Length: 276
Image 1: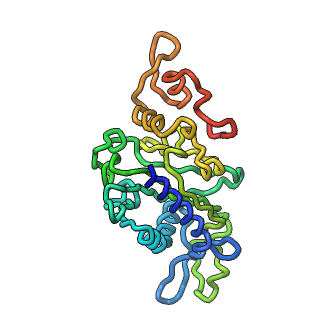
Image 2: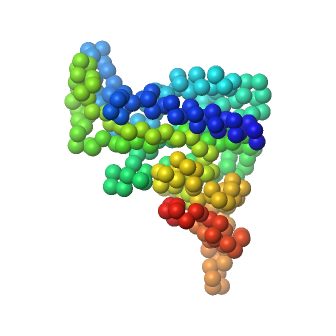
Image 3: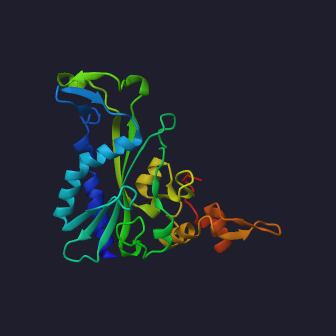
């Protein structure tokens, strides 16, 4: 679809500009902490959820400008647990909508080619029933495409941070940032999905964690296509296949699913991808 192709190109060009907006010359996050009326600066917690929310606030003016420049209105999620974070709606044709979820994660310090991964939304009610409005801003089927606007960063060594100590605003540049070396990406979420749940007992789709493959959109479904992604995650945890004996088992891996449906597991993933 032309609209999706155009939006993907616009979003990709936009995220290429964001690193300079949030980083100092040496790659440190320009956000150093929060300030009180006495001009004391307190270090931000290194907690991923806190960093993610502050980055979202930090970038929102730029996101708003991007939307206006390309003729989109934006609708923010009405509730904290709603999908997506931002809905982009074409101002002159409201049938064209793009879901954009804001995702942040940090590099593995011991294996810097890998990140901690993130969730890609629910595979529950609104994913299975594409006309549902439960926990989603607009019905899933009403979106032209679903994107992640992602940020991968390095976390500061916890030994170099002291959240109990405040510093004066005059020493702002000497304060160690809790995040640095940002890498931005924008990609359709199905292209970076894994075949495993993203978090505990909740019905969330997990991402791959190889950074190069995330940036390139070379996830586990990238060779199969979005229809396979939809079918796999719609049936995740419910579909039963023969276990090789006289019984059945739940599908728990994409290889099993593809082999049962198609018989050719070579379709599952590129040889270079190490996410399985």
